Length: 453
Image (cartoon, rainbow, N blue to C red; front, side, top):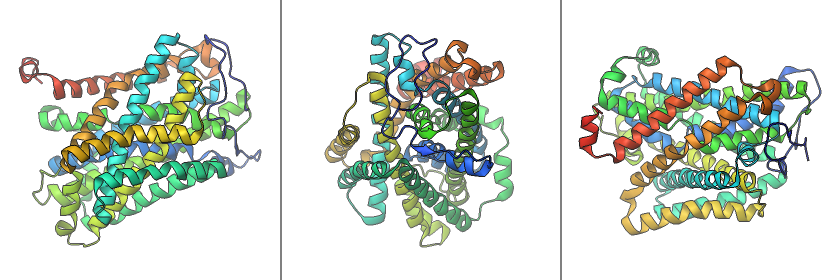
C-alpha cells in the first residue's frame, strides 16, 4: 500500500506502510489550486499540536504567569519555534523515506538498540498518557463533581471513539481533534476578554529579558517551559500521519507534500502558541496582578478565576478547556502507541487491543495512586510524568537529526547546513535543560549549591 520504502542507506528494507489501515487514504487533488491542496494536507499538524497544549504544560504556564507576569512569554515563543523546526524534520523523514521515525530506527539500528528505544518510547507514551488521563479526570471533576478515580476510567472511552472514527475515515479523527482544539481556543479567547490583560505588558513579554537568567526561580520555571516543549511521541506521530495523504511518490510530489504539510504544521503550532500564551497571560492578568502569585495547581486556578475576575462562567470555561485539552491529547496518544509498536517491532495487533493496552498502562497507575494516596497526589503524578518524558526526549530527537542529516538516506531532501546547525542547537538546548531539571529534582542540595544551581 502506498509507495515502497526507499532502501538506499538503510540496514533493512523496511516493512508495511505506517498506519497501513489509513496510509494514503486522504485524497490530494491534482488541481493547481493552492488553497485546495493546502486543505487536503491540513490536519496532521493539528493532531500533533495538541501535544504542545496538553495538561502537562498547563502547570508551568500557570506558575510562570502567576509568579512573574508576562515576562516568560518570550520563552514560550522560543520553545515554539524550536518545536516548529523539529516537526518539520519529522515531515521530511516521513515523506522522503516512506518511514515513520520508529520504522526508521528499526531499519537503521541493530535489534538490541531497537528494543531499548522501543521500551523507552513506550514508557514515555505511558507517562504522557498518564498526564492526559489525569488532566481529563480533573476537568470532569471540576465540571461535574465526578471523583478522580471514576474520571480516569471514563477517559478510557476514547479507545472506542478513535476506533469508530478511524473506520469511517481518518478525516473524522482529525475533525474531532480540531473541534476540541477550537473549543480550547474559544474558551481562552473569552477568558482573555474577561481578564483585561495589559497589552503593553504582553508586547514587552515577548522580548527576551536578561532578568530570566539572573532570577534563579524565574530561570527554573523557564527551563520547565522549554524542557517540556517537545513531546517524544509527537515526533513518531507526525512522521507517520503525514503519510495518510495520497500524494505522488515522485521527487516533485514529495517536494510539494513537504511544503504543504509544513504550512499545516506551522499554522497548527502557532495555534498551540496562542493557547500556551493564553494560559500564561490569563494567570498574569488574573493572579499576578491581584497578588495571588502562589497559584500553581490547576484546581487552585479554577477556584480563584471566577471570584478574581468577577465573571461566574470564567472557572467553568477554564475547566471545559482543560477537559478538551486532555481528551484531544489522549486521542492522539493512542495513535502514537500504535505507530511505535508497529514501527519498532513490526508487530500488528488488532487496533482495539493495541489501544486498550495503551490506555490501561496509563489508567492503572493513575487509579492505584489516587485510590491509595488520595486526590492530593495528582500534582505529583503530573510532575513524574514530565520527568519521565524529559528523560526519553533525547532518544527520539537525536535519531531524527541523524536520519534527516544523512544524504544517503534522504537524497535531495537532506537537511542543508543551516538547518543542521539550528536543529542540533535546538536539540542541545532542550536536552541540556531537561537534564538540568532532572538534576534540580533529584540531586542533593549540597551538590546543587557546589555547582551554583
